[in-house]
Image (cartoon, rainbow, N blue to C red):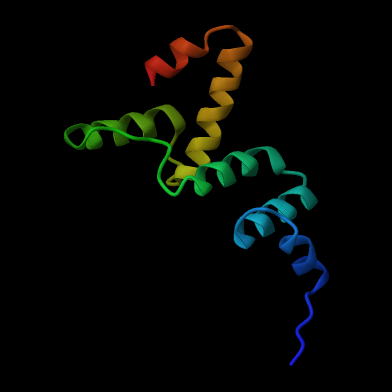
Length: 102
């Protein structure tokens, strides 16, 4: 039995990442919303949340995350908002303060 890739499958097979993330990025490029999904793909490829806290402070950290990045109910959208905020802080020369405050 010989299998053939679809045109989308051919593109996905050439990308050095999980096919689901590759498909997400290709569709994001087609719909012109690539920037936030690049951040989401990077966060997903870590295998763990980009937001971390000691066990005894996880509830507080979760509250602060919702307060800072809204009620997105999505770590990926929160990561995109955090990265966007960091880029703004970096442009102002205040990236260290941004990271320390969060």
